[in-house]
Length: 305
Ligand SMILES: Nc1ncnc2c1ncn2[C@@H]1O[C@H](COP(=O)(O)OP(=O)(O)OP(=O)(O)O)[C@@H](O)[C@H]1O
Image (cartoon, rainbow, N blue to C red; front, side):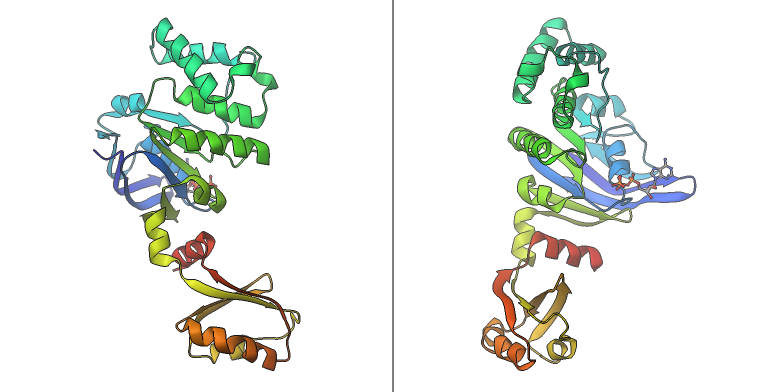
């Protein structure tokens, strides 16, 4: 059974088509990074996957259930934490978890047991009897995740879980997601490539309401990572456009922050000739490095294509 199956999903608001064609599927445990720029359609997709909004068209099944016809089953199998989780801040974490457990209709014994397990797992145990109002952003996010897990869901959906956090809070939350993904499917939206690179096993990229890529990270690297040459000249005012465009063995190049990145059809030739050609322009090399394309290079290529 697929954990998520989205086929031709569309969502239209009154005067705006937020999702035009969202098609992807997710199997098994691990972390899925759902990546897209501002307004790409991440939150809208997440709201549909969690049963909070209805699609306008297409088929969506989550943990085997249709999000429209089996909405209650979907909500009982999915845990959701928004970007900025809201609490009754005067409550302690223990009180909050009991309150949420009751909303899910769990019995007292189960609530107490799950609260102990989850507050320990999410690193809130020490602070569990303090009011939430005194928690840091990272602690609130981890409590939001604990709360989302109270009913033991098969799928955890996180909307930009680390975007609003400071580096320490971000580190703790990513560490927690890394633990959770060993036992369940975690679907997290983000616009930060570093997060994906660090913890995701599968990546889905959405652009203008359409999925432009869905692939395992392993497959993505195998298909797209290629060797490249990076260099920088001391003289930033030398224009290399004509020189680089005139070399038949250079397939693609770009300039970013003074650093040239060059993809070639013939690495041996490029290694032998390029440094000399650059010196002939009157420039001196400040930096020269044989490298491979990064996830950022691949992302830009896929999104701009
Ligand atoms: N209730 C709504 N009514 C009309 N348009 C909406 C509504 N909600 C979202 N949109 C529009 O749909 C598009 C997708 O929005 P969505 O919030 O899903 O994007 P996102 O990828 O989550 O972006 P961000 O990273 O900025 O939160 C945007 O153009 C947004 O303005």
